[in-house]
Length: 217
Length: 244
Image 1 (cartoon, chains in turn red, yellow):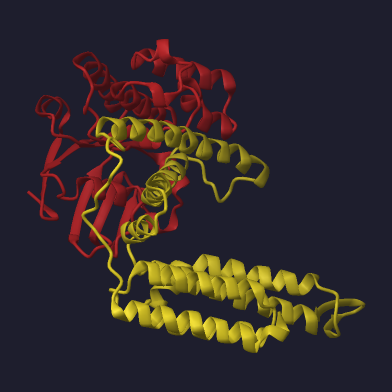
Image 2 (cartoon, each protein chain N blue to C red):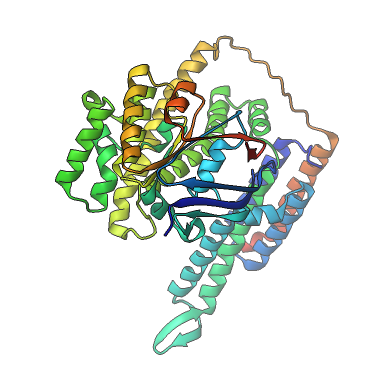
C-alpha cells in the first residue's frame, strides 16, 4: 500500500462522444490538499467521478493507495475516500438530519454510543443542531451542503474529494468548513477540492491544478 | 421513413398488442410477431439498440418462460429427473407463447419510440384527448429519466458511505430500500408541487383555446399504411376466427 492516488494514462469520453481526457495522468498525495480549477465543462467533476469509480475510464487505470479501482466496489472506495457531490441534495437519503449522519455507521454495526458522539460533534461543527430532527429536503441549500460534508466525514475517510464545497455557503459556514478541513489536514487526510472561490483556494491549497481541455498546467 | 405520423404508429401498435392478447396459438402469434417486425422495419427501428437497451428485461422474460415451463405439469413429459417431471410438451408450448407475446409487445413499444414523446402527445391532443391528460402523460414521460438519475445517485451515495450493497444480506437490504424510496417519493411530491406553481405562474389554461407550434398532418402514405394495417388485421381475424 502506498500513499498516493495514481491516475495513469486514462482516457474518457462522454456518452455522446465528446472526449474529455486523453492519456491523462496525475498523482495525488495523501496529506496534501490539491485544488482543481478550470472553466465549466473542462472535466473537473468528471475527474472526481472517475477517481470514485462512479465513471469508468475507457482506457488507463486509477489506483487508490496501491489498489486499482477496477478491483474495488463503490462501497470499498467509499470507505477510504469521501466524496461530496456538486449538488448536495443528490446524496442525502436519511429521513432526519441525525439519521443521515448515523445510518451508514449503525448499519455497519458500529457502536451506537460512539456513533452518536461523533454525530453530535458534526452537528456542532456545522451548526446543524437546531435542525437535527428535520427532513434533509426541507433544509436550506447551505445547510444541505453542510450536512452532505458532515455525513461524508462521519465515515472517517482517508482522503476527501469536495466538489464546489463553498457554493451557497455564508461566511460563517465557510469559516466552519475551513476549520474542519484544517483539522483533517492535521490528521494527514488529503483532499482534492474543486472550487472557484479564490479566498478558499488560497487558504487551503498545497497545489493548484488548472484543468483545460483534458490536460493541466 | 421516420416521418410517419405518430397516430399511425399508435393505431398499428394498438392492433398488434390487441392481436397478441387475443390469440393463444404459436403459429398465429409467430405470424403477428413477423408482421410487427416488418412494421418496425418500415418505421426504421434499430433492433440492435433495442436488444442492448432491454438486455436485462429480455433475460427476465426468458427466466419467467423457463419457470412457467418448469411449473406446468399438464401434457406429456419430455424430460424427467427421477419421479419429478421437469418439462412437458404443454409447458414448453406455453412458455413459447409467452415469449412470442412479449416479443410482440416489445416490438410494438419499439415502434412507438421512433416518434418523440412531444409528437405522440400532440397526436393525442389532435385526437381530442383532453389537454390536461395529454400534458400529464408528457410530464410523466419527461420526468422518468430524472427519477432514474436520482435513484442511481442515491444508490451511489449510499454505497459511497461504505455500504457494499452486493455484500449486504437480503434481510438488511430491505432497510436500505427505505433509504432509496423515501427521498425519491418525497422529491417527486415536492417536484409536482413546484411544477404546479410554475405552471400557474405561466398561465396554464388561462385561455380555453390552445394553439400549438407543432401541428401534425396525416400524409397520403399514412392513410395507405393505416388502411393496409386495419384491413390486414380484419382479414387475419376473419381467416383465423376459429382459433379465437
